[in-house]
Length: 100
Ligand code: FES
Image 1 (cartoon, rainbow, N blue to C red):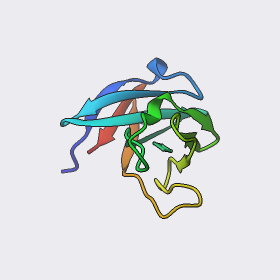
Image 2 (cartoon, rainbow, N blue to C red):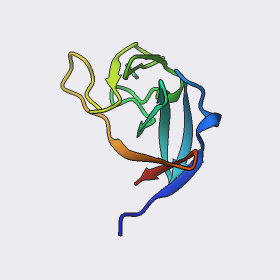
Image 3 (tube, rainbow, N blue to C red):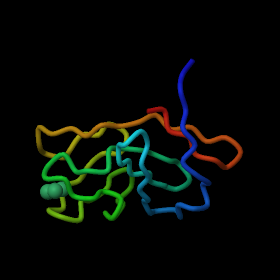
Image 4 (cartoon, helix red, strand yellow):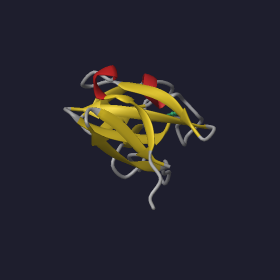
């Protein structure tokens, strides 16, 4: 069966913000875009910037280091041939689960 890891309550991540957590030794950024939650590897695929500290623009996070935009649904970096790892997310009873 599909493994799920509880990474905390929805209210711990305000709308328009991101938080980081560690699942199986991997740092993951979790983002709330208007009540929809996304999870991507927290290290920017460019040079490792901490994406959970970035600013959200719709479904993209702007990396705080060199301002590349990463699509939270696809992991694609805008205008570049770079891609970030994404994780399936589900919400049950106000708890967020990552499928690592
Ligand atoms: S480290 Fe993220 S854009 Fe350079």
